[in-house]
Image (cartoon, rainbow, N blue to C red; front, side, top):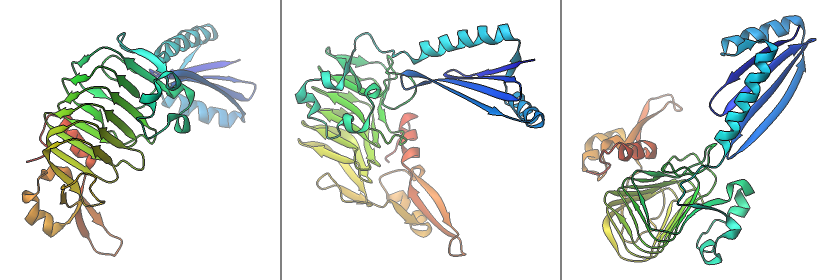
Length: 323
């Protein structure tokens, strides 16, 4: 007699059938705007099957009869396909990289054709002035760009005003992300990391802090106009090319050379003694550093390092990063 099991999450489901000494499994998942399906099967002894079915039930799989199994599979697969469909603000037009004006494409240093599959070369293109009532977040997940939780690649042809943060600070993506603003960009805080590439043809106006960190070879902020912010912090290969006047206090962590002229260099790493005696004199708060202990030499050597993730979280929570 055949036995049937399934386990479903929001964007993934697994279906198992056991018969004649074989376990067959189908996995259906929403991955970056499309649905992927993988089938596998494996012959096992009765003892191995019993052990695996015990594990399956412990992991939350449901055992159902054959009719419920196929009805559930059709229903869940339909839901996953609906989840995988690109969803975006109706004020946007979804365009391929090749459909963008050549002058716009040439503004970016990273060519998505070299790094991204055709599915990921989609850009949300907005021709009208855009006002966002909450944070705009750039990143990768299984969904496409949504109305306020913006994903991947965005183009604004008539300026962008964010009543919140521009957040590309998750530090998890090794794939390029793109934001192009023709005109001015206004935001509370701007957090940039990884391969996020942001180009602004007008002015960048930040009421709080601008932070760019951990850019590897690909991260870059390019502003053709002026930049104003309470504070700017850069470091660890995140490039900032600011063509106009910079009206801000500018600090740079000492891992590499500042890309902004006259930046004040501050330590990325402090010994325990220096941290306790000097941290209150640094421009950034103590919470921006984490404690590290090195046992490799056989003795406890404590140091304090700048923590970009914690720093971005402070800004997301509305807490100060600078004194």
